[in-house]
Image (cartoon, rainbow, N blue to C red; front, side):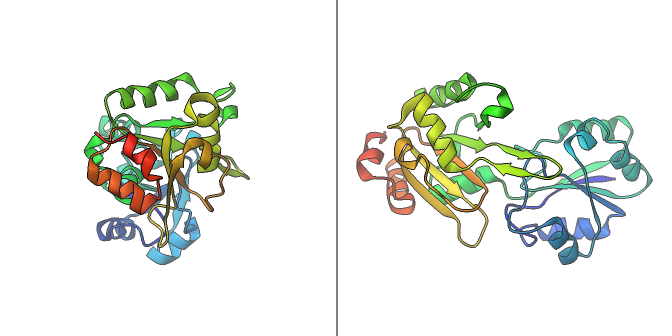
Length: 262
């Protein structure tokens, strides 16, 4: 059996009870942190809290050399865990398909996602979100500024009146972890797209004290929103309840929210 477990959004306590039980029942537990990570807890914190030993795998170790994971699942019960949900945004469908090809049973224990948290914390209705996109570091896509694909996604959603969830790039290597901040993301979009467009930064979703801050992109640009992880939301057309939520919960200027009202 190969069980995919979502660890939730913030720390070692964000996992569901079902996920905790899966960790503790497993013969071997694997994890990755190249797509996201728990910023409120280290891997060691998770191990201590749930009395397990976790084997950390790199991107290459999951995507190009999954044999240790698959072999462990063939010979016993293995768990593969990620922050958030293992099949939403941090997709590992390929690993699941490889397991099925070898006759290994799989199951998924879902975790809370950044997408759900962004909707909940901002007060924007989740069914009014369009296609999400990821804003990469310039060094990640080999160009300057914002890739055309990101702007095209935002504008296509706005034309339909839909909100856009913008995931911010994470770069992880052996000795360094870099997280794009909300201020950096706002600066890039203000310069390359539309500085007067309203946006909302969501920081540390799932933590005891998340931050939600709305304003025009040019006002959010360069602002320090504290520790990671950060998300950026570009609102589309607003229902009046969504307008009130952004003004009251995110501090979006009322005049900016009013312009987006349906």
